Length: 522
Image (cartoon, rainbow, N blue to C red; front, side):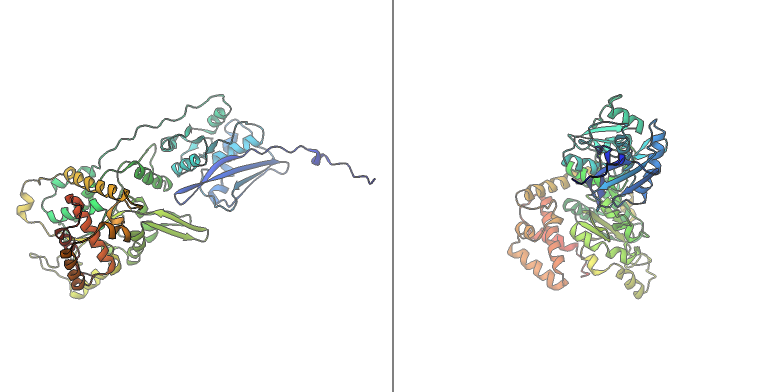
């Protein structure tokens, strides 16, 4: 029998069991569960992090090392290898600090706990305190779907995580506090979700009743709110376009629970939830400046983040002085306005963000603002007026459902008493119209929520016309040279007007009113 050499001391060393700690990586607005594996082995002191980490994740080794030392624990004086699995999923952000620290302590024999049922998130400061991070709501939702029982998050993010029912939320202030809880030395009481209060949008104290005149514009805004239609207001400076737009949220219906979670998740990923703020209960109102770039408006960056159109999801995107925006920026809105989503492609992959917003735009009729004004002469040449209006392309205008003129208000209207209808009155009618739409769409197999979201089949099913209406629409199409998209949008507006009137079918009067809001620019 051949003799074999004796095994070395290194080969005789028993293999140790790796403790896996779970965290998550946010991709778009969804979170993927990530396994944090640590191997502490003999060798020169060094920390290696693998698994497609970005710079922020790689820098975690210095934060974690100092945090462990300053939390009365011992950082291993040997080789530490950290693997973030799956290895082909890009990892970004500082929220891996806490799970990496916990995993190092567990695999160096300083901490024992059941790691299979908890997800960890948190950034560590050098003194061991746990700082708030973004994307906590997405992570909590993903953890619940994957069967985890609890999440350990920074105290600042606890209220956000409690939005996910049936999941234990452990709020921590420091690494030392987290370790004491896991060792059952000083258990932390799970965070309790506070009851969310549904608040009507106050519009910064604005009310439709306080806006003098502009009855046609108010009617157009009511239709836009009822069907979630895009609207453009054209008028001279000082006619009230901006205040009408800023008062528009006061007549919108309240967010549903599902919509609140949708909006809150976007703001969480974008890092736009401030402090201990919990559930977003009011519809967003975003008003970017006309110098905004395409990335800030649509979203993007080396690590794609939601832009203004996604932050306006289920709310309002107000573009004041529309022609002053860069034309390429405006053209980037065309696809999101049509599809309700925006897809941002990068070399590492594509991310999709929701962008189902109501566009409210305002502009002057010309550069000086007084074209066709009965009292003030316009100082612009025909060429200047043409170039000004061409900044907003035909395809973009074709995606705007309603166009309304907002003329300058006369002295008599300015000084008369306030109007009769308050924002609450208009909001009640809008909510009634929305409820009719919800009931109608719930009967069929459709994902539509409002008339503006109707597809071809829904439009054909719910927007039938009588012979008189058919004749009127045919004449309008042939006279105004309307596009197929304009045809569909006119029907959607007419359907919304009928809903506001409580009518089951579209009447000729509804169609005639819908045609009034097409400016004939097609």
